[in-house]
Amino acid sequence: MKRILVTGAGGQIGSWLVPALRELYGQDAVLATDIRPPRTELLEGGPFQLLDCTNQKALGFAAVRHHADTIYHLAALLSAVAEKDPRLAWHVNVSSLEAVLEVARDQHCAVFTPSSIGAFGPDTPKDPTPQDTLMRPTTIYGITKVTGELLCDYYHRRYGVDTRGVRYPGLISYGAPPGGGTTDWAVEIFYRAVEDGHYTCFLREDSRLDMMYMPDAVRAAIGVMEADAERLIHRNAFNITAMQLTPAELADEIRKHLPEFRIDYDVDPVRQEIADSWPDRIDDSAAREEWGWQVEFDITAMTVDMLKHIGGPAAPHGAPTSALERMPLDA
Ligand SMILES: NC(=O)c1ccc[n+]([C@@H]2O[C@H](COP(=O)([O-])OP(=O)(O)OC[C@H]3O[C@@H](n4cnc5c(N)ncnc54)[C@H](O)[C@@H]3O)[C@@H](O)[C@H]2O)c1
Image (cartoon, rainbow, N blue to C red; front, side):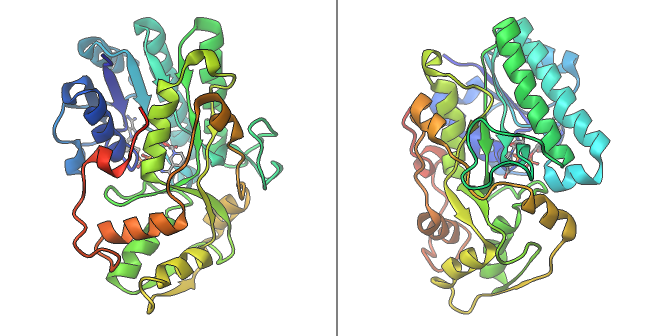
């Protein structure tokens, strides 16, 4: 039986991951925590605790009381928000991870920490971006992500903590809104298409970035934590990918369902510069070989499912299904 503590559980990923973990391991087995009260009903149906996870003592108490053996550490500031306050980003992203790793070392917990395509920089090969390559990010977000990967690997090598992670591409989902990243446009575009028939995108029409639909992202988090440790050559963190999209291409795909949809562009130089420094397509062969990673949603399936769930024409009566129905798990 797993006993899981999730930090940053009220965010875009947590609001999907927590219900999936609860369905898999039991409602009471998963303690959701966040610095803010959850905005979403998805966190109902199991224990929730307000917790600032940069506070190692409070985190340690919560882990002990819950008898946690696994921590999914999701709390972080995302790329665009981090750029507005780099020192806060360093504090939240790095101090919280240090606290999580110390608690994990003390309490013998396994740790999942997401990294990001933001860990790569403008000098990294862009297409494809290898698993092991040059990582010189130019954003504070990327710097905290590379630091996090190295720190997690260090705790594994030095103290034997079972640390694992994936480098997520931009994540597309409905429900909890994205938390201020460079790929938020790929979520906003669906809501604006359905509600207004029009979207003004903050990136150039030809900005190609790696993206993934949230059900695949959740399967990846659970899949890498369930993987046989003996087979893992890498740990922090595995490249994973699903699709490579430009705003113009996604707009074309949406127009197959909403022919009147219009997109225009008002480029935000800060987010454009971040996007330009990230890969076009990352090579996820290590994840496939070492723990059997496989993607399920391509651009066509993702677009149909997004429109179905946010009230578009693809399936107007699409009521939200249960977490595991939404995300078929191999586990
Ligand atoms: N969403 C994406 O597209 C994406 C892509 C790559 C990597 N990631 C990574 O995945 C993780 C989760 O991302 P997300 O999209 O769910 O982010 P999010 O911004 O939607 O959610 C983060 C959550 O952390 C909470 N939080 C912030 N500071 C905290 C603190 N001190 N203590 C406790 N909670 C705190 C926030 O309240 C929020 O609910 C992050 O590490 C992020 O870098 C996300």
